[in-house]
Length: 96
Image 1: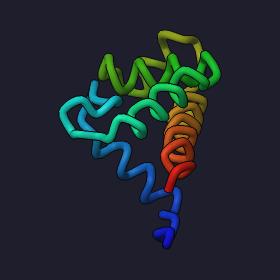
Image 2: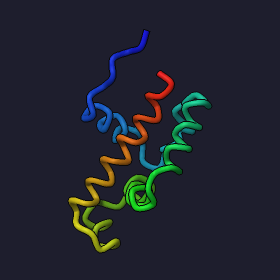
Image 3: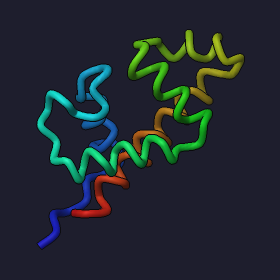
């Protein structure tokens, strides 16, 4: 039986709860199949979304610094982060 799907806000909160720089879950014991789905999903994101997400998650840059660095608005950074989190969340839902 499939568990109910979490609302988008809950998914975003989950992804934000994962430690910085730990997208692939090396220290969280994520199952190999789920880990591979995350890797594939990350690689399949549009380049701009992947770059913004990586700057925030791995380089620990705040939204305003990312926006300044890329010459875009903070709203666009927020949109890229949300899109990345949704994309990764959907990749995990594929097998559930």
